[in-house]
Image (cartoon, rainbow, N blue to C red; front, side, top):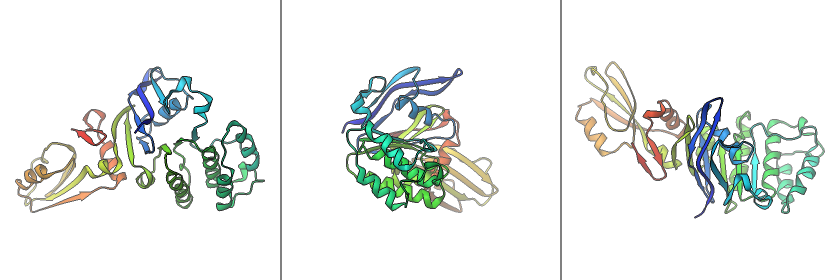
Amino acid sequence: MADAIVTDRLTKYFGGRRVVNGLNLKVREGSVYALLGRNGAGKSTTIRMLLGLLKPDFGTAELLGEEVSQITPATRAQIGWVGEGHPLYRWMTVDGAIRFVRPFYQQWNGDFVDQVLDHFDIPKKKRLSKLSNGQRAQVSLALAVAPDPKLLILDDPTIGLDAVVRRDFLESIIQIIQQQGRTILFSSHILSDVDRVADHIGILSEGVLRVDCPTEHFRESIRKVVMEFAEPLKEPPACPGLLSSSASGERVELVIVNYGDEHRAYLDSLSPRSMDVLEFNLEDAFVEYTRGRQGTMPVFRRETMNV
């Protein structure tokens, strides 16, 4: 399967600081790829370079087979975007925004826009400034999807939305995903949202892509081991793939990447009174993984992992 997004050593500096550092990213056609990272990791800068809103200092980026700096209008029309805060001309009415955007595209699914507006009870004659944050989010998504793009890029679209509105927005995204052939790249700080919709994740740390693998593989590769000993250990056990460790009295907790039979055998040899191996959800796995310094983080690449 071809790649909808390809970057080659993509790099960006701000004030002498390297915000995106030699990024090599591939997003396959038809996938839902979540780009994650802590604040300042380089997510939004990467997305702005992909959209051509920011020029890289080094490296290249391709969308749908064309270099971003030379992308043709026809290919540009195949790319939808919803940004953080849903940047629309808020003095316009909803209908005015539709009529403003529509002429830029040869293809337009007006029925989809009407369905979104009807479903969320959004009046066409109402000014965007008078809509709720959730309604503006739905209008932004409808306008981005109406041209039937092959690639949809969402930059933290649910930020600032309450739980109910966020759920409705996600349901809209899930319906879009079900339309075959569409590729979605999105960033989000809400990991429960990512866990629901993304089949692949990338995690940036200080501008470096440390994780690039299926969501399930990342989540299932990290385990917490909780052990109780008859007496306190002098120091927590050390083993391959150890992300973090802590000890309090007779209790020891280890977070281990790629936990397997060899870990179990080694820890059993220490004769703990009890040992429990706990799974993480995506949010907890992300938190445990990103606690460490970049230099100590194991690297996940596609279906394989090197520690």
